[in-house]
Image (cartoon, rainbow, N blue to C red; front, side):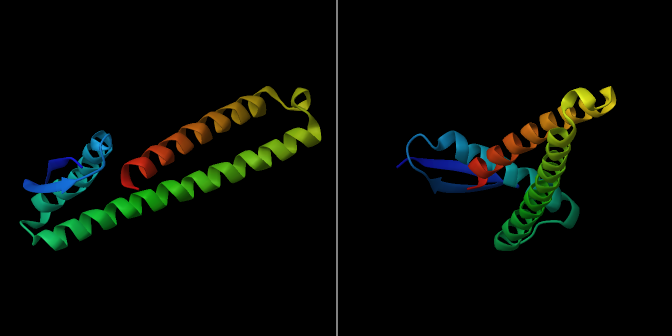
Length: 122
């Protein structure tokens, strides 16, 4: 089990992980550091536990927002698909066809982003 040194808000931590998981641990540490460093710059040096808690809560808030956005996007796509089945693609105006294609693309990107976040955090 490899031991890795990660840095969060200029503080070093030694953590271990399963072999092969090092890139995911570094990615997760970067996400946490990206929240903790500006927090520390704004508030000043915080106790370790408080800094990590606040940075973790900010990440959780971002994740919850992304999940809600993904849920709404999926619901919009489901509704568009329902309408498409009712009317048929040929009956939709060109703008609606473009919107449907855009929504499908956005949903795919949002889902991929959510999967990457889950892999990094979980």
